[in-house]
Amino acid sequence: MTTLEAVAPACSTQLAARVIENVVVAEGTYRLRIEAPAIARTIQPGQFLMVRATKTLDPLLGRPFALYEVDGDSIDVVYLVVGRGTSELSNRRPGDVVSVWGPLGHPFGPPPDGGVIYVAGGIGQTPFLSLARWWSGQASYGGIACPKPVTSSRLLYGVRTAGLAAGLSDFEAAGLPVELATDDGSAGHHGYVTDLLRSRLERGERPVKVIGCGPPPMLESLSKLVAEYQVSCDLSLENHMACGFGVCFSCVAKIRQADGSIDLRRVCVEGPVFPASSVVW
Ligand SMILES: Cc1cc2nc3c(=O)[nH]c(=O)nc-3n(C[C@H](O)[C@H](O)[C@H](O)COP(=O)(O)OP(=O)(O)OC[C@H]3O[C@@H](n4cnc5c(N)ncnc54)[C@H](O)[C@@H]3O)c2cc1C
Ligand code: FES
Image (tube, rainbow, N blue to C red; front, side, top):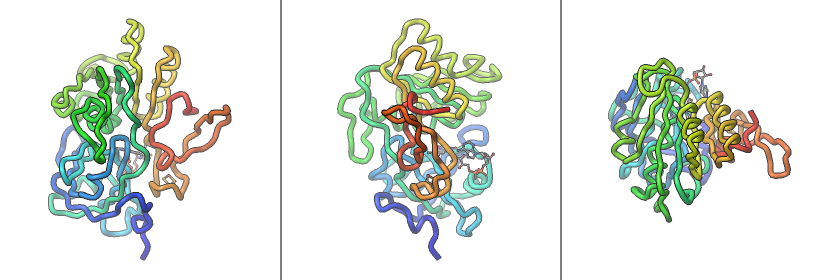
């Protein structure tokens, strides 16, 4: 039988990957480490993988997860359990095999010339560990080293409550300063993560680039904020996806084109990264 994995795009690899580790890193949040040498050699920050945890046809579709980190032949993704697919995944143990295909989507481009601020909401912090390590010159991905490291970077990270903050020690180990915001005030700033960016912009700080990833309402308010201060910003969108490689159109986003017209773009193949100014909310 032809499955969606069997028709994955030629530029990506589909493989049965052995689970090395699947550990809790925060409330309802796991870090999955899988052995996937062919993908580990080529994937770059910003790209994602489709992962299917079951051998049966239910659930039929893989689920998309951003690259968190590469370690030799293995790849880490960090995921929050929200439904069937992620719940099945959380039951996989070391030695189990999951179906994986990738890399998918476009990576983040070359680093900006200056300082960058990463803004994450909820589980949207996952692309930023590898990106920060790449753009600071600490690591190469897909055999590509950063030509000129960014001059400074920090992560503004908002979660509903402190227990949901994942990967803080990883960011610290990568030398990336983190400022936390929580909706309930249990850690860091009591309020939205965009408040943290707004106070920096109000104080006159001007990063050459802001990169955002998180739930749509947060990305919408981030887009308005950077537009107000005319700061360049890219967003990594996490729209629902079915196929992951351009055939089903389940993932489309409204994107403004250079001539001002608005068109639907597939987040899985034309994204997931888009300029914030082009996304129509
Ligand atoms: C490019 C990309 C990268 C991603 N990277 C990560 C990652 O690194 N870590 C991570 O935890 N998640 C990530 N996601 C989101 C992740 O794919 C979904 O959470 C996952 O598919 C949910 O599958 P499920 O079967 O558990 O939930 P489902 O049963 O499919 O859905 C459960 C509930 O979650 C909602 N939901 C599911 N997916 C989304 C979504 N994309 N946006 C908003 N609501 C949603 C559904 O409406 C439903 O209410 C990414 C998504 C994309 C497109
Ligand atoms: S997920 Fe099928 S076209 Fe994007």
